[in-house]
Length: 133
View (cartoon, rainbow, N blue to C red):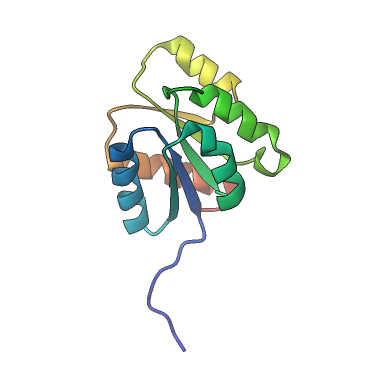
């Protein structure tokens, strides 16, 4: 019994309050072979991470109610996620935001707008560095 479908074990969680962005990223990463889950509510982000158990998280910084820095700190505070890389997605481009991203536990920083190809490249690099790629 042989299966021809390539199944990736890498799980990617995309957290962004803009459904247009999460839909594009989800479609692209799914076609690239990843298992993808999306969360558009920042208040549900930590619960979604606990349910989905991602290998990498793509996290928007600017969201209503609670920002990406807070979500990152909450996720990283959970021992099961301390080693899960978090890639921040942001429309901001100030170096202090980049510093704050790393201080809150983020591993990478991608400025919007970004190409899906560039995003995939960074996800691949981050997963390879963790041994999940």
